[in-house]
Image (cartoon, rainbow over all chains, first blue to last red; front, top):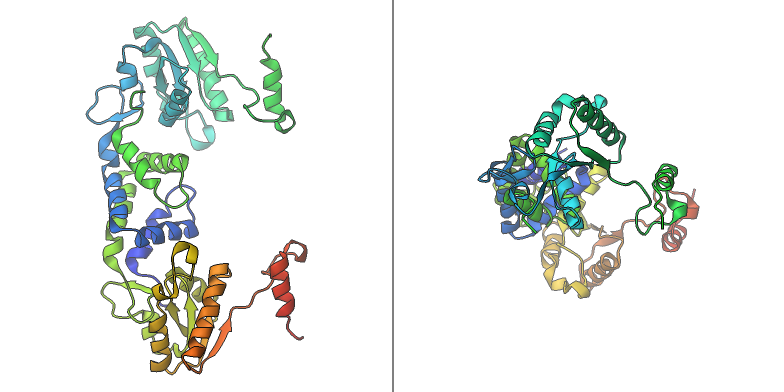
Length: 204
Length: 204
């Protein structure tokens, strides 16, 4: 079969197809959209991708993502935030989700994943030593373990709880509440969520 | 609210969010995936996007997309293809779909869209004069009008049919068959498709 599309377009389709969840058709759609748009659209996208790794590093204390020219995360540096309360999350983007609630004024600690033997991720790959160091250094009183509600997230929470107790660190530990999401009818809630909701019922 | 993510990451999320059908969450996912991957992944993607417009132009005869260094579409240039049969399509990517069938050995003509008064696209924006020129120059005997099965595609097909008849060009014109797609149960076929399938029934 003769080559049906110009090489430059095939290349773009190929590379766009590496994005997560993007199949051949979607990649074609993206590439063709960019081709029909002003060249400045794809040039700006290209520019931002070239700068992506150069402009981003990890905070050495919290492991949040920060600008290359920053020393530590601005959320940690902010004197109005309570350093004695830490929300422990799996990934940097989880911080955004929690910050959007506007309900948390403590600081964050990014583990860098969750324990998952299938994916070959053990506790030694997570930023746990740095967390125990912070608990001591900042006299932390509360740890909110905000890992995902997945099997890996739950295992990680359990591991952290035991690990910190075993290390003899006295710190209050909690886990985000499980229950029925706002706007969801009882009849559509799954069994496990409903069990959690019953277990965690609150007095009126 | 303090800036929660590094600028370089925010930029990449912004630019990825311009792709069609990509919302904020998907753009975050793409950007974070690229950030976790080797820098070469985003650099190669950036490189392909920079080259996209430079490496692609329109064939002056068929309006298919071709390499900048090609004169005409290789599908048109190919002496084994029948220049007296033209499949008329709306967009360049439609050629790929038809080529994948392996059933067509004629040539293509890309209209560059379909007539759509709502979007301000009239017949004068489509490559129709170039099509009538080809019909004369190449002694075309059959025109397969392969526009989409949408209102715009149907209007365009009807317009083309009348336009070519009015121009006094003697050429056989056909339209792709409408009917029940392979693998679809009769009970799930919509009414209009089913009417077309009845109308276009074939003797056994």
